Length: 109
Image (cartoon, rainbow, N blue to C red; front, side, top):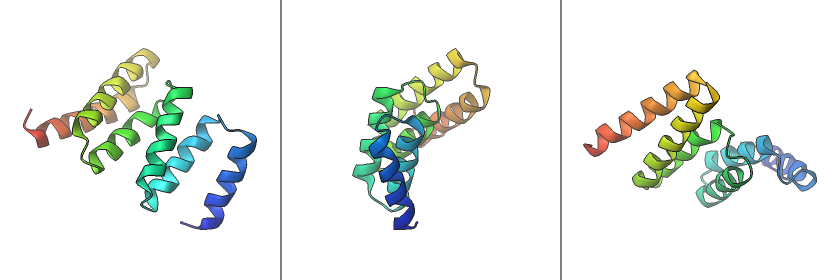
């Protein structure tokens, strides 16, 4: 990841601090460079300001798995599943169901 890309995203965020796509993109960039705290900060801010941003739930759940917060991951997947049903987003629903099922199998639930 280029610091130039991160710098550009941060500059864009200054003028649009509640832009859902920018918050998501920043979270992914931080996650990719291993800055998990910053990734989590941006994902949770996105969830606060735009809880219907469906792509958030899969990636936030995976991040919770990565930091061994399995209960939070399951809760996030379940919230995303409910939202995907509400939105009629069958692609997201499938991905979230698969992630949830895989985690449950890993945990022996």
